[in-house]
Length: 224
Image 1: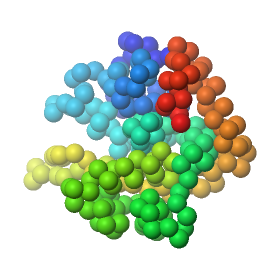
Image 2: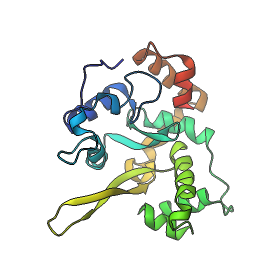
Image 3: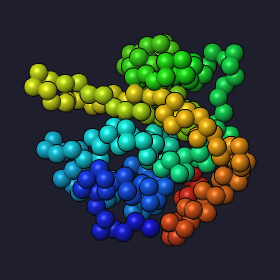
């Protein structure tokens, strides 16, 4: 279990903890201490003065040791590459893609990602006909489903730059597939070695070990 006194002052602190734990949600989730938010100094949480975990996301993704996306009950978090293949094995069985001849948005978005390798959220919206503010929540719902199924993850965040070279506004997510980011042979390795049920038991055993005070119900809410 993460110690309450542990704080993320630098990107390396966060990356090290994700690699140690294997999985780490970004926001509070009902399991005390098991989130990035609870271990971030207040000075770095959505601060205008200094970068913090919100700004570190893109650079940490680019290092290539951890995957980031809405992996935990449709909310954001980190997964180390050690555990990514097993989580993918579990989730693709639980959240299958619509058939190839389907015109459902999840399939259309996935096809764009596999053809283009990656795409900014605004471009994806436009290509599948979900552009505009009125359809923003609809698009986010489909993207959350694809990320829960690990058919998509975030490959970077891109910001607007002012005339002084400073970032401003919320970063735009750039999406890709795990295969594109980390290689198909790697991310599909657990599928070749274990059933989804075996992968799930492997993950659940690990989570009980690192979170001995968490209930089965709490863990299932995060992992299912």
